Length: 68
Ligand SMILES: [Zn+2]
Image (cartoon, rainbow, N blue to C red; front, side, top):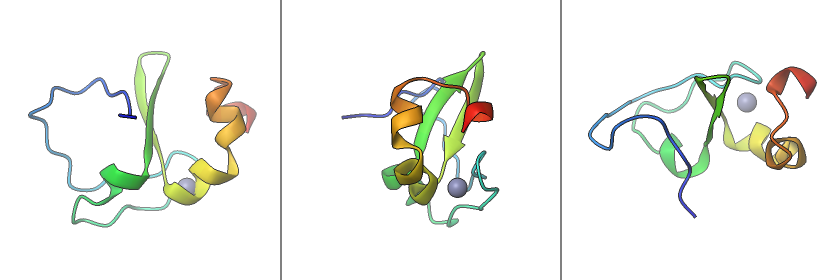
């Protein structure tokens, strides 16, 4: 399953910050394989692999991260 993203396919983002815990992704781009991207109120939100697991139910319920 591909994660939905609002960015064009050509966009390359090397590193991102987790919106839940503030962790910074590796700069090699591997975060794209494990991190979760979602759009909340028109804003792209990225969550690291650990927070994705911890908050999987909330993410699937489409709750804003403010509710986690
Ligand atoms: Zn995190």
